[in-house]
Amino acid sequence: MGLNKKSVDDINVSGKRVLVRCDFNVPLKDGAITDETRINAALPTINKLIADGGKVILCSHLGKVKNGPNEGESLAPVAARLSEKLGKDVTFVADYNVTGADATAAVAAMKEGDVVLLQNTRFRGKEETKPAEAGEAFAKELAELADVYVCDAFGSAHRAHASVAVVTKYITEKGGENAVGYLMQKEIDFLGNAVENPVRPFVAILGGAKVADKLKVIDNLLEKCDTLIIGGGMAFTFLKAQGYEIGKSLCDDEKLDYCKEMMAKAEKLGKKLLLPIDTAVADGFPNPIDAEIAVEYVDSTQIPADKEGLDIGPKTQELFATAAKEAKTVVWNGPMGVFENPTLAKGTIAVAKALAETEATTIIGGGDSAAACNQLGFADKMSHISTGGGASLEFLEGKELPGVYAADDK
Image 1 (cartoon, rainbow, N blue to C red):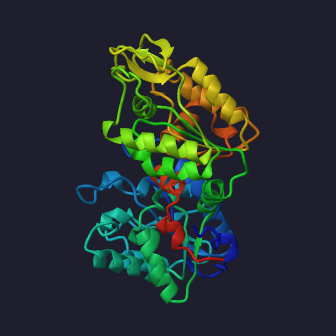
Image 2: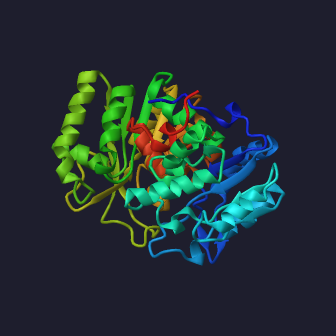
Image 3: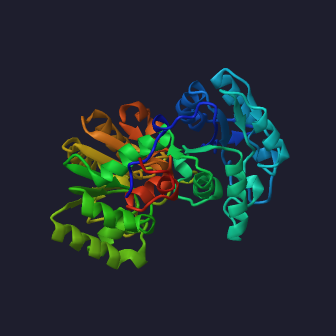
């Protein structure tokens, strides 16, 4: 993986137009932003470019935009919050075409240190859709607005979209530079280097519901880590592959042979593969998800046929916590149980607590694990919490991410 990329510290933007791909995909309710984490994460890069005298042009997608452009997914609320946070007017280009005459005029009027925010890139409808030439045309129009490109949207870095990766080709053609922002750099430093050059012992903890979601991650991490811990719903497929009764627990029956292969691979490579030794079981899944539920703890090898496993038990919590505390580098992706339920969050809390108390470098791989750390109050105790769910998983798989790959090498 080429991880030595130009960052905003390596480029001179004074007087130049800088197109910055951010991740402003924030949750909205009745037009109000309910979580500003992604806006806050973009501020260091934006402030750096303003301070260096760049003309800062921001772009991002928001939502899925399934049925065409609509005001409910406009970036207007983001522009308003950014103006407050930056302490200066952010000019918002409301044009659904994104790169039309309004955008060109707004950029032409910019002075050094000014900030413009373009409309939701997916309103254009060519951000991610076929035919390819439509995306190429959009990328070229984005590049025509700028002299330099900065990608700071790790949450979209695994997608080869017009505004994430394709635009770099046209910036390069006109003699411009393509760099990564501080947020992207941090993801590369932590996630990329944790997998490629970890300080050992390196422990990887995987949870979540399905083995199918993490096939390549398990395979890749077994090559890299010293200990692989598997919890969450996916653990039951491994237990069944060993011949144990798992009752009504989640199982990817099509992945039983794969689980056997991975256990054999761990043994061959001399890696520890830890599975739950006890399990919280109940009559069925809680409905609603946060409803009160009666659980009992049983050995993971003796789950009753009429019960469903929903969290790791106390002995497993101790086993996993001990392994984490002996590590120098820990990567965690996926909860240990149904963490949205107070009774079934104990395993996830125990793992988060162990990571919060260790001296190791602790990297949380986005998605539900990040949500769990934030909700449970452990976020500030972790070395790094990834801002990308899908992107962080693909990094852990050892894949080249288009948004990282497209930036210029140092």
